Length: 117
Image 1 (cartoon, rainbow, N blue to C red):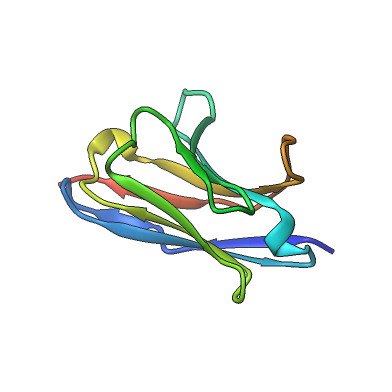
Image 2: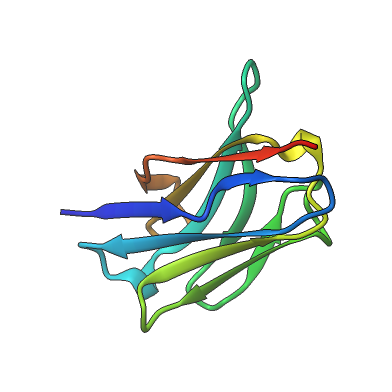
């Protein structure tokens, strides 16, 4: 059965960096579109970044130039490198996997990222 496990969240000061990891099992990882979403308290879930099997990426406007999504198909793992973090980046970050070109099918349990001094 498919499973996505996020790690790497935590508390960081404004301007700092974090790297999130999403370890996948039970899926043919290299075929899937992988994405990171986030949801802050009282707000709707939003797309942070997506990477498809070819390696092409797209980002939410609020994180362009600061966040980088990547994947290692040999390790069945997706990553989100987050730099220049701001307090408004505080949210629970979720990893997702979807069939090519389709909505996410599988979700991780989420990892909390808090940006605060």
